[in-house]
Length: 434
RNA sequence: GGACCUGUGGUGCAGCUCGGAGUGCACGCCGGCCUGUCAAGCCGGAGGACGCGGGUUCAAAUCCCGUCAGGUCCGCCA
Image 1: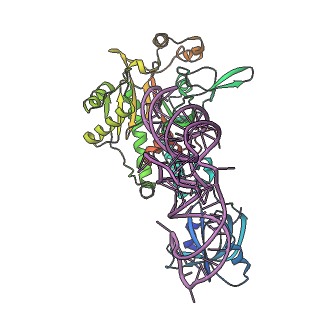
Image 2: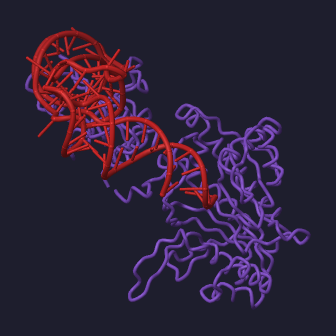
């Protein structure tokens, strides 16, 4: 390894000789003195060199293009004149490791063009923060799962049949047949229930072949999936999810509150328990009374309705989250359990955060005969599903779970307007590269 | 898939309504000046057949038609 001192720790090396490595952010080349602002993954600092005629170091600095990668040896001097951290490094030697061409993008460049040059875009402190927060978020989830005895699974992403309708599946060549990219780990986390794993989670990629042109959809994204056995109802699933999210937001609030606020201008609010719950039919009434006619006829809420119900909940309960429950069977897959007293409603829910759907969950139907009947009612062909239906023939505990879109959660958490901003490399109908 | 919007030096915009020589602004780039800068400042310079193809016109970045690319919203969904 190159022995280097990180920029954030320079203040611990007053009057000592150190080596820093990083990217040249800025050069201010004056008559008698020249400054470099150097950035590494921990921050930026000023380097300084007194100018002397025919000094090779000075000449090197004068010719240095922005964003070149350098290794610099020098002595740390605390100096209150320096606005950037109150210190600077007096340059003794500089080694240009990689010269940069003029950059094709800057801070003003539109998102689509920045995504073309994502590796440069991600150099900014702002974009790095997104992925530091994501890491902390996942760490918090794992902490909760670990303390509650969850098992982590890695389900296959290549499958022979669709788990839902099949309309949104990517088909790929698979030797002399075809395979599909998993749109959800749904079947496999239920399989873990049949295996007696009790509680499982998975963080992994899912694929959706939807030509969706919105700021909240992508064709490949990271899904956070949870499945739990021995539940009484979908209430238990919601209780776990609100717990998971509250722990996470408490954690993010402790670690990144100030930086998130100064960078993105949003407060990280740790929600109160329990999250409000509203039956979907009541939600539609509330929305229509607020003056928005829900045009769709299938009984579901539209995005404007979700935004309005979120406003209502914020106003009435001072809460950013709301569980919408008891969706009609018409808009839910066959494996969602129905209410015993009302067969047209499912024991399911969506979780809406600040007006955006981040989760769908449900108690699953674990009784083989009923499950088969519900699949037939939806007009599904049973043969391709038989491997899944078999899970229910040899002893399946009552269970339920949910799937959560990681990028949507991050987007809302940071107050950003587009999942592309919070995805390391976005994939959409019009983007397959870089 | 539907509706709407946008394509102008490397980047972000203005110019288009009301046609008159590629005109302007900001950032970046190149050169020069400047005894400590820090959003540095000052002076100068390079860089664009205005997404593409047709049409109208004496004349098109500007008006019309088509086409391509991208975006936003809806549908679908996490």
